Image (cartoon, rainbow, N blue to C red; front, side):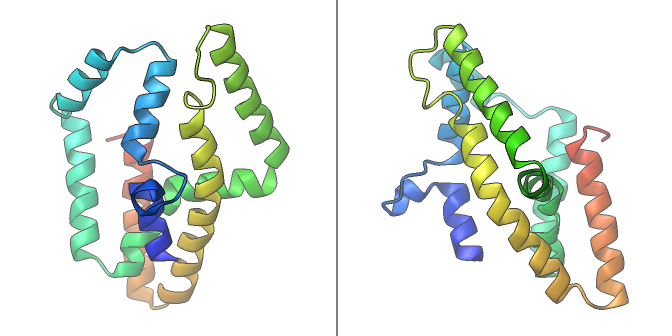
Length: 165
């Protein structure tokens, strides 16, 4: 499952699948919101904000230095939210995706499949990824020490995800 998750994140299209990489999904979405290729390129080349630099540095440190289950488990912050929403409120999520498609259509976006693809793919893939993360935590974060490390890492990731730091 971890290999599948890595393939999903980096683009299944690299291995003959249908899903493109996260950067491509983000570019399609940005174009749907009206950004030009030049604006997207400038944003991609821009320096990170201090908050983003801290978040990415901390995330990289966790992935390199923490127990694998704690590292994987920190992804439950975003992917777990999607998993739980899709599991408990599937119709509501589908309605939100339909509203997004309708919004892009009302703006005259010509490629209505690409513009919402980021949201659509994450609604699908993060449901699987969230369950995977949940299972890794349940099966491998079993000692009091790992549970405390998971609690700390999850809290920091949640704060970062919400823009608190």
